[in-house]
Image (tube, rainbow, N blue to C red; front, top):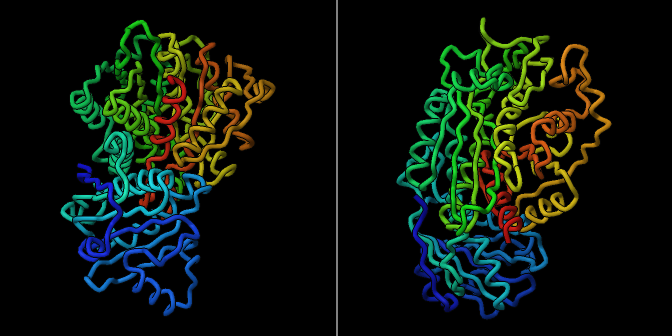
Length: 485
Protein backbone atom coordinates (compact mmCIF):
# COMPACT_ATOMS: atom_id res chain seq x y z
CA UNK A 1 0.00 0.00 0.00
CA UNK A 2 1.46 3.35 -1.04
CA UNK A 3 1.27 6.35 1.29
CA UNK A 4 -1.59 8.80 0.94
CA UNK A 5 -0.82 12.13 -0.70
CA UNK A 6 -1.84 15.67 0.24
CA UNK A 7 -1.15 18.86 -1.73
CA UNK A 8 -0.87 22.51 -0.79
CA UNK A 9 -0.39 25.17 -3.45
CA UNK A 10 1.24 27.55 -0.97
CA UNK A 11 4.95 27.30 -0.35
CA UNK A 12 5.80 25.96 3.06
CA UNK A 13 6.04 28.49 5.87
CA UNK A 14 8.66 28.52 8.60
CA UNK A 15 5.99 27.51 11.10
CA UNK A 16 4.76 24.56 9.02
CA UNK A 17 8.31 23.41 8.38
CA UNK A 18 9.14 23.50 12.09
CA UNK A 19 6.11 21.32 12.82
CA UNK A 20 6.59 18.85 9.94
CA UNK A 21 8.74 16.33 11.80
CA UNK A 22 10.59 15.25 8.65
CA UNK A 23 10.89 17.44 5.59
CA UNK A 24 12.65 17.54 2.23
CA UNK A 25 13.22 21.07 0.92
CA UNK A 26 14.08 21.42 -2.77
CA UNK A 27 15.21 24.63 -4.43
CA UNK A 28 16.74 25.52 -7.76
CA UNK A 29 20.51 25.71 -8.07
CA UNK A 30 21.93 29.13 -7.15
CA UNK A 31 18.66 30.17 -5.47
CA UNK A 32 19.18 32.64 -2.58
CA UNK A 33 18.81 31.30 0.94
CA UNK A 34 17.61 34.53 2.50
CA UNK A 35 13.85 33.86 2.32
CA UNK A 36 14.13 30.12 2.82
CA UNK A 37 12.23 28.60 5.78
CA UNK A 38 14.81 27.50 8.30
CA UNK A 39 17.42 29.74 6.69
CA UNK A 40 19.11 30.64 9.98
CA UNK A 41 19.62 27.01 11.03
CA UNK A 42 20.74 26.08 7.51
CA UNK A 43 23.32 28.89 7.42
CA UNK A 44 24.61 27.86 10.82
CA UNK A 45 24.96 24.24 9.70
CA UNK A 46 26.77 25.24 6.51
CA UNK A 47 29.12 27.47 8.48
CA UNK A 48 29.85 24.75 11.02
CA UNK A 49 30.69 22.33 8.21
CA UNK A 50 32.70 24.98 6.33
CA UNK A 51 30.41 24.73 3.29
CA UNK A 52 29.22 27.38 0.87
CA UNK A 53 25.52 27.55 -0.12
CA UNK A 54 26.20 26.08 -3.58
CA UNK A 55 27.36 22.89 -1.83
CA UNK A 56 23.67 22.01 -1.66
CA UNK A 57 23.82 21.32 -5.40
CA UNK A 58 26.47 18.66 -4.82
CA UNK A 59 25.18 16.93 -1.72
CA UNK A 60 22.06 17.31 0.47
CA UNK A 61 22.49 18.91 3.89
CA UNK A 62 20.49 17.77 6.92
CA UNK A 63 19.51 20.39 9.50
CA UNK A 64 17.88 19.91 12.89
CA UNK A 65 15.45 22.80 13.21
CA UNK A 66 14.52 24.48 16.46
CA UNK A 67 11.06 22.88 16.48
CA UNK A 68 12.55 19.40 16.29
CA UNK A 69 12.03 18.83 12.57
CA UNK A 70 14.76 17.09 10.63
CA UNK A 71 14.93 19.01 7.35
CA UNK A 72 17.09 17.99 4.41
CA UNK A 73 17.90 20.73 1.89
CA UNK A 74 18.97 20.09 -1.68
CA UNK A 75 19.49 22.20 -4.80
CA UNK A 76 18.45 20.73 -8.15
CA UNK A 77 19.93 21.88 -11.45
CA UNK A 78 17.10 22.59 -13.93
CA UNK A 79 19.17 21.22 -16.79
CA UNK A 80 20.02 17.94 -14.99
CA UNK A 81 18.73 14.67 -16.43
CA UNK A 82 15.84 13.01 -14.66
CA UNK A 83 18.16 10.16 -13.67
CA UNK A 84 20.52 12.60 -11.94
CA UNK A 85 17.59 14.38 -10.32
CA UNK A 86 16.21 11.09 -9.01
CA UNK A 87 19.63 10.11 -7.66
CA UNK A 88 20.06 13.40 -5.84
CA UNK A 89 16.59 13.24 -4.31
CA UNK A 90 17.10 9.58 -3.35
CA UNK A 91 20.23 10.45 -1.40
CA UNK A 92 18.44 13.31 0.32
CA UNK A 93 15.41 11.20 1.24
CA UNK A 94 17.59 8.35 2.51
CA UNK A 95 18.54 10.52 5.50
CA UNK A 96 14.89 11.10 6.33
CA UNK A 97 13.52 7.62 5.63
CA UNK A 98 16.27 6.07 7.77
CA UNK A 99 14.30 7.40 10.75
CA UNK A 100 11.15 5.58 9.60
CA UNK A 101 8.83 8.58 9.74
CA UNK A 102 5.09 8.11 9.41
CA UNK A 103 4.71 11.54 7.79
CA UNK A 104 6.92 13.38 5.32
CA UNK A 105 6.71 16.94 4.02
CA UNK A 106 8.07 17.79 0.57
CA UNK A 107 8.58 21.51 -0.02
CA UNK A 108 9.45 22.89 -3.45
CA UNK A 109 10.50 26.51 -3.92
CA UNK A 110 11.12 28.35 -7.19
CA UNK A 111 9.37 29.12 -10.45
CA UNK A 112 6.39 27.12 -11.73
CA UNK A 113 8.38 24.94 -14.14
CA UNK A 114 10.92 24.02 -11.49
CA UNK A 115 8.24 23.23 -8.92
CA UNK A 116 6.39 20.89 -11.27
CA UNK A 117 9.50 18.94 -12.16
CA UNK A 118 10.91 18.82 -8.63
CA UNK A 119 7.62 17.85 -6.99
CA UNK A 120 6.89 15.01 -9.43
CA UNK A 121 10.40 13.62 -9.05
CA UNK A 122 10.35 13.88 -5.25
CA UNK A 123 6.91 12.29 -4.91
CA UNK A 124 7.98 9.39 -7.13
CA UNK A 125 11.19 8.79 -5.17
CA UNK A 126 9.30 8.96 -1.88
CA UNK A 127 6.59 6.56 -3.05
CA UNK A 128 8.90 3.86 -4.43
CA UNK A 129 10.97 3.86 -1.22
CA UNK A 130 8.12 4.23 1.27
CA UNK A 131 7.72 0.56 2.19
CA UNK A 132 10.22 -2.22 2.88
CA UNK A 133 10.42 -5.10 0.42
CA UNK A 134 8.90 -8.38 1.67
CA UNK A 135 12.24 -10.03 2.42
CA UNK A 136 13.66 -7.12 4.37
CA UNK A 137 14.00 -7.42 8.14
CA UNK A 138 12.39 -4.00 8.56
CA UNK A 139 8.91 -4.13 10.07
CA UNK A 140 6.00 -3.16 7.85
CA UNK A 141 4.74 -0.74 10.49
CA UNK A 142 7.83 1.36 9.72
CA UNK A 143 6.36 2.25 6.34
CA UNK A 144 5.73 5.87 5.43
CA UNK A 145 2.00 6.60 5.64
CA UNK A 146 1.49 10.17 4.45
CA UNK A 147 3.27 12.59 2.11
CA UNK A 148 2.36 16.28 2.05
CA UNK A 149 3.55 18.37 -0.92
CA UNK A 150 3.91 22.11 -0.32
CA UNK A 151 4.24 24.68 -3.10
CA UNK A 152 2.75 22.73 -6.00
CA UNK A 153 -0.58 21.31 -7.17
CA UNK A 154 -0.37 18.59 -9.79
CA UNK A 155 -2.78 18.37 -12.71
CA UNK A 156 -3.87 14.83 -11.86
CA UNK A 157 -3.17 14.55 -8.11
CA UNK A 158 0.03 12.69 -9.07
CA UNK A 159 -2.05 9.83 -10.50
CA UNK A 160 0.54 8.94 -13.16
CA UNK A 161 3.44 9.19 -10.70
CA UNK A 162 1.55 7.05 -8.24
CA UNK A 163 0.67 4.42 -10.86
CA UNK A 164 4.27 4.05 -12.03
CA UNK A 165 5.46 3.83 -8.43
CA UNK A 166 2.86 1.13 -7.76
CA UNK A 167 4.14 -0.83 -10.75
CA UNK A 168 7.75 -0.46 -9.60
CA UNK A 169 6.93 -1.64 -6.07
CA UNK A 170 5.01 -4.63 -7.45
CA UNK A 171 7.94 -5.58 -9.67
CA UNK A 172 10.47 -5.33 -6.85
CA UNK A 173 8.24 -7.13 -4.33
CA UNK A 174 7.86 -10.12 -6.65
CA UNK A 175 11.54 -10.14 -7.65
CA UNK A 176 12.71 -10.06 -4.03
CA UNK A 177 10.76 -13.16 -2.98
CA UNK A 178 12.92 -16.19 -2.12
CA UNK A 179 12.71 -19.16 -4.50
CA UNK A 180 10.75 -21.35 -2.06
CA UNK A 181 8.07 -18.63 -1.94
CA UNK A 182 7.89 -18.14 -5.70
CA UNK A 183 7.91 -21.47 -7.48
CA UNK A 184 6.23 -21.44 -10.89
CA UNK A 185 3.04 -22.73 -9.24
CA UNK A 186 3.18 -20.00 -6.57
CA UNK A 187 3.90 -17.37 -9.19
CA UNK A 188 0.97 -18.43 -11.33
CA UNK A 189 -1.31 -18.24 -8.29
CA UNK A 190 -0.11 -14.71 -7.54
CA UNK A 191 -0.62 -13.71 -11.18
CA UNK A 192 -4.21 -14.97 -11.08
CA UNK A 193 -4.82 -12.82 -8.00
CA UNK A 194 -3.27 -9.79 -9.71
CA UNK A 195 -5.42 -10.40 -12.79
CA UNK A 196 -8.52 -10.35 -10.61
CA UNK A 197 -7.44 -7.14 -8.86
CA UNK A 198 -6.56 -5.25 -12.06
CA UNK A 199 -9.24 -6.67 -14.33
CA UNK A 200 -6.99 -8.60 -16.74
CA UNK A 201 -8.07 -11.72 -18.57
CA UNK A 202 -5.73 -14.63 -17.99
CA UNK A 203 -4.90 -17.77 -19.94
CA UNK A 204 -2.39 -20.33 -18.71
CA UNK A 205 -0.70 -22.62 -21.21
CA UNK A 206 0.53 -25.48 -19.01
CA UNK A 207 3.65 -27.54 -19.60
CA UNK A 208 1.54 -30.45 -20.83
CA UNK A 209 -0.37 -28.26 -23.26
CA UNK A 210 2.79 -26.59 -24.54
CA UNK A 211 4.40 -29.99 -25.02
CA UNK A 212 1.43 -31.06 -27.10
CA UNK A 213 1.56 -27.80 -29.10
CA UNK A 214 5.22 -28.39 -29.97
CA UNK A 215 6.80 -25.66 -27.84
CA UNK A 216 10.02 -27.64 -27.61
CA UNK A 217 12.31 -24.73 -26.71
CA UNK A 218 10.33 -23.74 -23.61
CA UNK A 219 9.67 -27.35 -22.61
CA UNK A 220 13.37 -28.24 -22.91
CA UNK A 221 14.08 -25.79 -20.09
CA UNK A 222 11.05 -26.77 -18.01
CA UNK A 223 11.43 -30.55 -18.29
CA UNK A 224 14.21 -30.70 -15.69
CA UNK A 225 11.84 -29.71 -12.91
CA UNK A 226 10.46 -32.64 -10.89
CA UNK A 227 7.19 -30.70 -10.64
CA UNK A 228 5.79 -29.84 -14.06
CA UNK A 229 4.32 -26.52 -12.95
CA UNK A 230 5.88 -24.38 -15.69
CA UNK A 231 3.60 -22.42 -18.02
CA UNK A 232 3.42 -19.56 -20.45
CA UNK A 233 0.82 -17.19 -19.04
CA UNK A 234 -1.05 -14.74 -21.24
CA UNK A 235 -2.58 -11.64 -19.67
CA UNK A 236 -4.75 -9.22 -21.63
CA UNK A 237 -5.60 -5.62 -20.84
CA UNK A 238 -8.11 -3.86 -23.06
CA UNK A 239 -8.23 -0.11 -22.58
CA UNK A 240 -8.74 1.09 -26.16
CA UNK A 241 -12.18 2.29 -27.17
CA UNK A 242 -12.16 -0.09 -30.12
CA UNK A 243 -11.35 -3.78 -29.93
CA UNK A 244 -9.99 -3.47 -33.47
CA UNK A 245 -6.96 -1.53 -32.20
CA UNK A 246 -4.02 -3.90 -32.54
CA UNK A 247 -2.52 -4.72 -29.15
CA UNK A 248 1.03 -4.17 -28.04
CA UNK A 249 2.75 -7.35 -26.87
CA UNK A 250 4.96 -7.47 -23.77
CA UNK A 251 7.01 -10.63 -23.21
CA UNK A 252 8.84 -11.43 -19.98
CA UNK A 253 11.36 -14.05 -18.94
CA UNK A 254 10.09 -15.67 -15.75
CA UNK A 255 12.74 -18.20 -14.68
CA UNK A 256 11.94 -18.53 -10.98
CA UNK A 257 15.29 -20.14 -10.25
CA UNK A 258 18.20 -20.84 -12.55
CA UNK A 259 20.74 -23.47 -11.55
CA UNK A 260 22.32 -23.41 -15.00
CA UNK A 261 21.19 -27.00 -15.59
CA UNK A 262 23.88 -29.49 -16.60
CA UNK A 263 26.21 -26.53 -17.19
CA UNK A 264 25.87 -25.82 -13.49
CA UNK A 265 26.54 -22.31 -12.26
CA UNK A 266 29.30 -21.80 -9.66
CA UNK A 267 28.13 -20.52 -6.28
CA UNK A 268 29.00 -16.91 -7.03
CA UNK A 269 26.72 -16.82 -10.06
CA UNK A 270 23.92 -18.95 -8.64
CA UNK A 271 23.38 -16.54 -5.76
CA UNK A 272 20.17 -14.49 -6.26
CA UNK A 273 19.10 -16.58 -9.23
CA UNK A 274 15.60 -16.39 -7.77
CA UNK A 275 15.65 -12.93 -9.41
CA UNK A 276 16.00 -14.43 -12.89
CA UNK A 277 12.23 -13.95 -13.25
CA UNK A 278 12.67 -10.18 -13.12
CA UNK A 279 11.75 -9.65 -16.77
CA UNK A 280 8.28 -11.06 -16.15
CA UNK A 281 7.93 -8.93 -13.01
CA UNK A 282 8.79 -5.83 -15.07
CA UNK A 283 5.98 -6.74 -17.48
CA UNK A 284 3.56 -7.13 -14.57
CA UNK A 285 4.67 -3.77 -13.16
CA UNK A 286 4.09 -2.04 -16.49
CA UNK A 287 0.71 -3.70 -16.90
CA UNK A 288 -0.30 -2.68 -13.38
CA UNK A 289 0.71 0.95 -13.96
CA UNK A 290 -1.07 1.17 -17.32
CA UNK A 291 -4.19 -0.45 -15.84
CA UNK A 292 -4.21 1.90 -12.86
CA UNK A 293 -3.97 4.88 -15.24
CA UNK A 294 -6.68 3.36 -17.46
CA UNK A 295 -4.59 4.09 -20.53
CA UNK A 296 -6.53 3.71 -23.81
CA UNK A 297 -4.34 0.93 -25.20
CA UNK A 298 -4.65 -2.80 -25.73
CA UNK A 299 -1.88 -4.98 -24.32
CA UNK A 300 -1.17 -8.71 -24.35
CA UNK A 301 1.49 -9.90 -21.92
CA UNK A 302 3.23 -13.26 -22.31
CA UNK A 303 5.15 -14.56 -19.28
CA UNK A 304 7.45 -17.57 -19.72
CA UNK A 305 7.41 -19.07 -16.22
CA UNK A 306 9.63 -22.05 -15.36
CA UNK A 307 12.68 -23.18 -13.41
CA UNK A 308 15.99 -24.34 -14.89
CA UNK A 309 16.80 -27.43 -12.85
CA UNK A 310 19.56 -29.99 -12.89
CA UNK A 311 18.38 -33.60 -12.82
CA UNK A 312 17.94 -36.78 -14.85
CA UNK A 313 15.26 -35.18 -17.04
CA UNK A 314 17.05 -31.87 -17.61
CA UNK A 315 17.98 -30.98 -21.17
CA UNK A 316 21.61 -31.50 -22.16
CA UNK A 317 24.26 -29.94 -24.39
CA UNK A 318 24.25 -31.34 -27.95
CA UNK A 319 20.54 -32.13 -27.93
CA UNK A 320 18.43 -30.84 -30.82
CA UNK A 321 15.00 -29.50 -29.97
CA UNK A 322 12.25 -28.03 -32.14
CA UNK A 323 10.71 -24.68 -31.20
CA UNK A 324 7.05 -23.81 -31.61
CA UNK A 325 7.63 -22.10 -34.96
CA UNK A 326 9.39 -25.20 -36.34
CA UNK A 327 12.97 -23.94 -35.92
CA UNK A 328 15.36 -26.68 -34.79
CA UNK A 329 17.91 -25.63 -32.17
CA UNK A 330 21.24 -27.22 -31.27
CA UNK A 331 21.75 -26.95 -27.51
CA UNK A 332 25.23 -25.68 -26.68
CA UNK A 333 24.96 -24.43 -23.09
CA UNK A 334 22.08 -25.21 -20.75
CA UNK A 335 22.63 -21.98 -18.84
CA UNK A 336 21.47 -20.06 -21.91
CA UNK A 337 17.94 -21.08 -20.97
CA UNK A 338 16.41 -17.62 -21.10
CA UNK A 339 16.54 -17.36 -24.88
CA UNK A 340 15.00 -20.83 -25.13
CA UNK A 341 12.03 -19.95 -22.92
CA UNK A 342 11.59 -16.63 -24.71
CA UNK A 343 11.70 -18.21 -28.16
CA UNK A 344 8.32 -19.90 -27.80
CA UNK A 345 6.80 -17.01 -25.85
CA UNK A 346 7.83 -14.61 -28.64
CA UNK A 347 6.38 -17.00 -31.22
CA UNK A 348 3.04 -17.00 -29.41
CA UNK A 349 3.10 -13.21 -29.18
CA UNK A 350 3.98 -12.78 -32.87
CA UNK A 351 1.19 -15.13 -33.98
CA UNK A 352 -1.36 -12.62 -32.65
CA UNK A 353 -0.02 -9.95 -35.07
CA UNK A 354 0.58 -7.23 -32.46
CA UNK A 355 1.55 -3.69 -33.41
CA UNK A 356 4.84 -4.03 -31.50
CA UNK A 357 6.64 -6.57 -29.34
CA UNK A 358 8.80 -5.56 -26.38
CA UNK A 359 10.51 -8.27 -24.36
CA UNK A 360 12.28 -7.99 -21.02
CA UNK A 361 14.85 -10.46 -19.75
CA UNK A 362 17.81 -10.78 -17.40
CA UNK A 363 19.50 -12.49 -20.31
CA UNK A 364 23.27 -12.23 -20.73
CA UNK A 365 26.43 -11.69 -18.74
CA UNK A 366 27.81 -10.02 -21.86
CA UNK A 367 25.48 -7.09 -21.32
CA UNK A 368 26.85 -6.67 -17.80
CA UNK A 369 30.33 -6.57 -19.29
CA UNK A 370 29.22 -4.02 -21.87
CA UNK A 371 27.36 -1.55 -19.64
CA UNK A 372 27.77 -2.67 -16.03
CA UNK A 373 24.72 -2.46 -13.77
CA UNK A 374 23.78 1.22 -13.95
CA UNK A 375 21.91 1.03 -17.25
CA UNK A 376 20.42 -1.63 -19.50
CA UNK A 377 20.92 -2.48 -23.16
CA UNK A 378 18.26 -2.51 -25.85
CA UNK A 379 18.06 -3.78 -29.40
CA UNK A 380 15.44 -2.57 -31.87
CA UNK A 381 14.41 -3.65 -35.34
CA UNK A 382 14.74 -0.12 -36.72
CA UNK A 383 16.28 3.24 -35.83
CA UNK A 384 12.91 4.88 -35.13
CA UNK A 385 12.15 2.36 -32.39
CA UNK A 386 15.69 2.67 -31.04
CA UNK A 387 15.31 6.45 -30.77
CA UNK A 388 11.93 6.08 -29.05
CA UNK A 389 13.48 3.65 -26.60
CA UNK A 390 16.33 6.04 -25.83
CA UNK A 391 13.94 8.97 -25.35
CA UNK A 392 11.85 6.83 -22.99
CA UNK A 393 15.01 6.31 -20.93
CA UNK A 394 15.53 10.05 -20.62
CA UNK A 395 11.85 10.65 -19.83
CA UNK A 396 11.69 7.97 -17.13
CA UNK A 397 15.09 8.35 -15.48
CA UNK A 398 15.91 4.73 -16.39
CA UNK A 399 18.83 4.81 -18.78
CA UNK A 400 19.17 2.51 -21.77
CA UNK A 401 21.76 2.28 -24.51
CA UNK A 402 20.97 0.95 -27.98
CA UNK A 403 23.17 -1.76 -29.51
CA UNK A 404 23.39 -2.93 -33.12
CA UNK A 405 22.63 -6.53 -34.07
CA UNK A 406 23.89 -6.93 -37.67
CA UNK A 407 22.79 -10.00 -39.62
CA UNK A 408 26.39 -11.09 -40.32
CA UNK A 409 26.62 -12.20 -36.67
CA UNK A 410 24.29 -15.06 -37.63
CA UNK A 411 27.22 -17.02 -38.99
CA UNK A 412 28.43 -17.64 -35.44
CA UNK A 413 25.20 -19.54 -34.81
CA UNK A 414 25.44 -21.79 -37.85
CA UNK A 415 24.83 -25.41 -36.88
CA UNK A 416 25.72 -28.67 -38.63
CA UNK A 417 22.82 -30.53 -37.02
CA UNK A 418 20.02 -27.96 -36.67
CA UNK A 419 18.70 -24.71 -38.12
CA UNK A 420 20.56 -22.67 -35.50
CA UNK A 421 22.80 -22.97 -32.48
CA UNK A 422 21.41 -21.77 -29.18
CA UNK A 423 24.64 -19.84 -28.45
CA UNK A 424 28.41 -20.31 -28.68
CA UNK A 425 31.04 -21.16 -26.08
CA UNK A 426 33.34 -18.35 -27.21
CA UNK A 427 31.85 -15.74 -24.87
CA UNK A 428 32.14 -12.95 -27.41
CA UNK A 429 29.19 -10.62 -28.06
CA UNK A 430 26.67 -12.99 -26.53
CA UNK A 431 24.22 -10.10 -26.00
CA UNK A 432 24.23 -9.61 -29.79
CA UNK A 433 24.11 -13.33 -30.56
CA UNK A 434 21.18 -13.78 -28.15
CA UNK A 435 19.34 -11.02 -29.99
CA UNK A 436 20.05 -12.58 -33.37
CA UNK A 437 18.77 -15.90 -32.00
CA UNK A 438 15.56 -14.33 -30.67
CA UNK A 439 14.97 -12.47 -33.94
CA UNK A 440 14.13 -15.86 -35.51
CA UNK A 441 10.92 -15.93 -33.47
CA UNK A 442 9.34 -12.48 -33.96
CA UNK A 443 8.80 -12.57 -37.72
CA UNK A 444 8.27 -9.13 -39.26
CA UNK A 445 6.79 -7.57 -36.13
CA UNK A 446 8.51 -4.37 -34.94
CA UNK A 447 10.44 -5.47 -31.86
CA UNK A 448 12.51 -4.16 -28.97
CA UNK A 449 14.56 -6.52 -26.84
CA UNK A 450 15.62 -5.31 -23.39
CA UNK A 451 18.56 -7.03 -21.67
CA UNK A 452 18.08 -6.01 -18.04
CA UNK A 453 21.65 -5.56 -16.87
CA UNK A 454 20.56 -2.92 -14.34
CA UNK A 455 17.88 -4.86 -12.45
CA UNK A 456 20.24 -5.23 -9.47
CA UNK A 457 22.58 -2.40 -8.51
CA UNK A 458 24.21 -2.51 -5.09
CA UNK A 459 23.29 0.55 -3.07
CA UNK A 460 20.34 1.49 -5.29
CA UNK A 461 19.96 3.15 -8.65
CA UNK A 462 18.20 6.28 -9.83
CA UNK A 463 15.08 6.76 -7.73
CA UNK A 464 15.27 3.45 -5.87
CA UNK A 465 17.22 2.75 -2.68
CA UNK A 466 17.11 -1.05 -2.72
CA UNK A 467 19.55 -3.18 -4.73
CA UNK A 468 16.59 -4.74 -6.55
CA UNK A 469 15.35 -1.60 -8.25
CA UNK A 470 12.51 -2.43 -10.64
CA UNK A 471 14.36 -1.04 -13.63
CA UNK A 472 12.19 -1.18 -16.73
CA UNK A 473 8.78 -0.33 -15.30
CA UNK A 474 9.12 3.44 -15.63
CA UNK A 475 10.92 3.05 -18.95
CA UNK A 476 8.26 0.69 -20.25
CA UNK A 477 5.41 3.02 -19.33
CA UNK A 478 7.17 5.96 -21.01
CA UNK A 479 7.80 3.86 -24.12
CA UNK A 480 4.20 2.71 -24.37
CA UNK A 481 3.04 6.29 -24.04
CA UNK A 482 5.32 7.34 -26.91
CA UNK A 483 4.19 4.41 -29.07
CA UNK A 484 0.50 5.17 -28.59
CA UNK A 485 0.48 8.97 -28.44
